[in-house]
Length: 198
Image 1 (cartoon, rainbow, N blue to C red):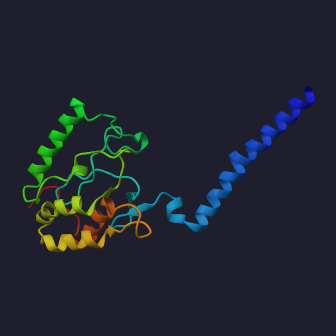
Image 2: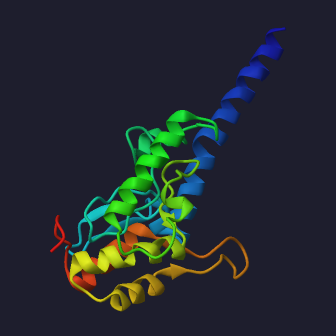
Image 3: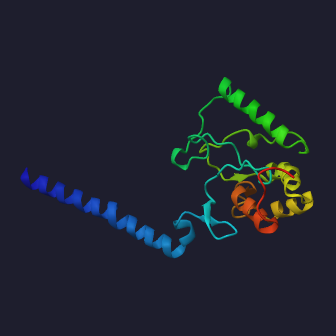
């Protein structure tokens, strides 16, 4: 019996060292060599070189001169420590009320937007932190952003087009626009947006 316990203890220690120490260190080292930006959080810097976020995590933008991401149900909104969906079902009164409030706000903030509000601008993603929009949802916001920045819609749309990412490997998923990168590109092109529209 004593012999079996010693074998079990040794096996536990070896497994612990291999899977809890060696394996993570090797993977971290490989990631740092092959994909250092991704391994360090895909951090994004603003026009002054300050890190302002990660291209993998959405953040809210309330200023009219910036594109807005999908709503977030993570914590108090866009909280990376509380990633989750709202878990409200289609019959939820809370979900219905929130969507109605978002629709009213979006119509008020985007009076010149073409057509109906894209569904993704009123529905949170499963994580509550999806940093991407469809090109259509970004295009819908172009008139507001252009007006707030005193620019032509064509100029702003050109930046949206430039930052539209195609399908992965040419056939997986749908085209997307990373909202943080798009907003930083606007700042680089036109300067920072003011809090209020002109």
